[in-house]
Each structure stands twice: as structure tokens, then as C-alpha cells.
Image (cartoon, rainbow, N blue to C red; front, side):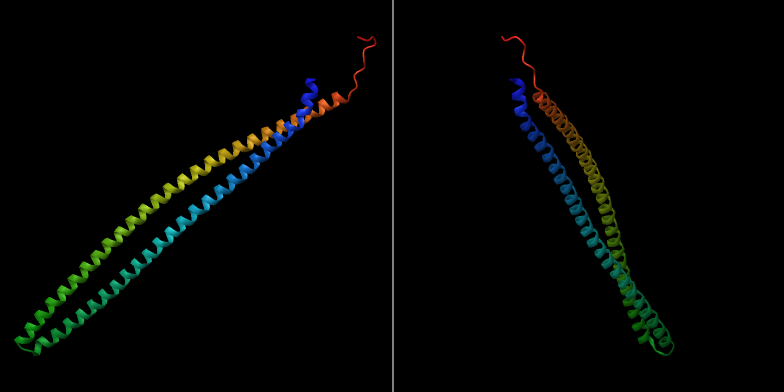
Length: 196
């Protein structure tokens, strides 16, 4: 009676084992897809952030270059102005001397203003460089965390594969057991010679 019940339950056991194995395979595939999607999202976000920082650096570099060009032009103008006034000093009276002094004061103020502006730009550039360093440090931390997550997910995937292998082995063993039971059932047992 027990043998026939076990034999009757064998297809159900096979279906359960197959369903579990199939479910595990689907879960592993979904997990791998999820990992790939998350990794791609992190990579896209990091790429967008780096693009934004690159554009900001380019703008700052362009501005500094323009300021340097302006400073050179102003210095050239100052030299030309000084040369003109020096030539005029030889032939002009006290009034020209006063004008030259006023112009030199104005030139110094302009030069000081330009110098202060350049110093301010250099400080801003330093702040941007510090921000970039902080972003690099953050990216390094994020990358290490992503690597840790990927490593943990790889370990989980290995565990799922191991479970899948174990369930496959059990399924094979169950199939062998069912085949053995079927052979035992097919084997005809001779009846006793004397009746009960």
C-alpha cells in the first residue's frame, strides 16, 4: 500500500522539484538583469555628473584665458600710454605733468582692479579644483560600494547556482527512485504455493 502511494506521489514530487528548479533559474536571471540595470544606471549618473563638471571646468578655463588676454591688452595699453606721456613730458608744461599723474593713478587703480579680479578668479579655480577632488573621492567611494554590491550579488548568484545544482541532483535522484519503483512494480511477485 505504501509503495503504491509513493509511486502515485512520484509525478507530483517530480513536478514540485521541476517547478522549484525552474523558479530558481528565473530568479537568478531576474537578479542578473537587475544587477545589470542598476550598474548601467550608476554608470549613466556618474557619466552625466562628470560631463557637467567637465563643462564647468571648460567655462572656468575659458574665462581665465579671456581675463589673461584682457590683462595683457590692458598692460599693453598701459605701456603705450606711459610711453606717450613720457614723450609728451619733454615738451609740455606743468599741466601735462598733472594730467600724467592723474592718468598714472587711474592706471594703477585699473591694474590693481585687474590684479584683484585675477586673484579672485584663481581662488574660484582653487575652489573648483577642491570640488573636483571631492567629486573624485565620492566617485571612488561609490565605485567601491558598487564593487562590494556586485561582489555580494555574485556570491548570491553562486549560492543560487549551487542550490539549482543541488535541486537538479535531487531531481535526478528522484527520477532514478521512480524508475526503480516502476521496475519493482513491473516485476511480478510469484504467489505462495499454499494458500492462506
